[in-house]
Image 1 (cartoon, rainbow, N blue to C red):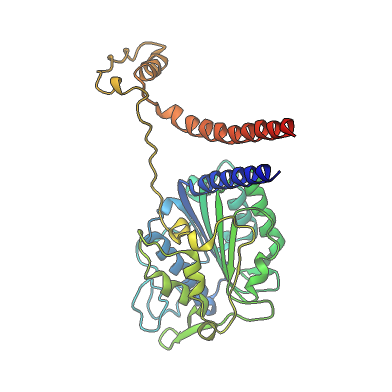
Image 2 (cartoon, rainbow, N blue to C red; image 1 turned 30 degrees about the vertical axis):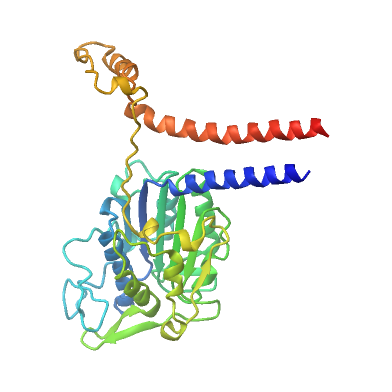
Amino acid sequence: MLFLHLLLLILASWARALQDDAVREHTNNWAVLVCASRYWFNYRHMANALGMYRTVKRLGIPDSNIILMLADDASCNPRNTFPGRVYADRGRHIELYGDNIEVDYRGYEVTVENFIRVLTGRMDPSVPRSKRLLTDDRSNIFVYMTGHGGNEFLKFQDNEEISAFDIADAFEQMYQKKRYNEIFFMIDTCQANSMYSKFYSPNILATGSSRVGENSYSYENDNDIGVAVIDAYTHYVLEYMEGINKTSHQTMADLFGSYDVTKINSHPGVRNDLFNRPLDQTLITDFFGGVSQVEVSPPTHEEHCDAPLPPPPPPSSPHASEKQERIHLRAGLTTPATADAETGVGRQVRTWGTVGILGVLVGWVGTRR
């Protein structure tokens, strides 16, 4: 029996290692950034979202992989002393709006319905690709939200609310439809930690700016602009992120360890019970950075490496593509159409091989008894 227990432990560890490898094999990163407020006095919420937008772009996520939802009513507001510009610090060192910003949902398009549709992919066919979250089961998604909220709700433009249940159910739909590999959810609002309390789908890591019953506070005012320009929690997160580059090895544990309650004036929270990777082994760039992975399959037979390939059939041949594929296979090369399939088949073979070995060994131990 001792041998059987040891065998089961070894096989369980092996299966867990294979699962962890599969989790790390994400091939693309996306960001959904939501400023749920409007009006001039909520200038800081717009700066929060634009600060995150600047950070994910700097670390390599392209605009094609960013969905930005913004009221966009502060930069050109008549009360803005600096027309067409948005700043997040009193010294106005970094201009966040600039000429290189792409707002996907602007003004009254920022609604609860549109946000849920973006996450779940339930779009009208007329919606352009630039407004769609085109993710799959190998996509890591960073979801950031900011605005005015309370216990288990976040207001959208003082007109409607989204609840913690709504977001949790949207994430579950995404999981069922294989629309993500992992999700990192971050929210900056009053009682923010209540917004991830209802999550129940796997592979979700969440953090918020304040406990239930706590407010989230602004960081500083700009006397020339006349309002608060950024919230404290987002300010210190962005300040930490300025030390991160595309090749950084800083982890999520490092980011969460940088939280300082005395500076933020609230108690940020972290929920990782649904996340199956250790935080000290999860890179920040797994969510904030761009991903470029190339899978190269070596030739099956080395002797064919230097052999010249036969010329392709003429384009007029109705079976040109089929012949070309057979030529590649005969030469021992992996075609692009079969590369992903081979990867998936290999993973299935390893998994079922583990189950088969377990069954054989358990049966052998049973007969020995």
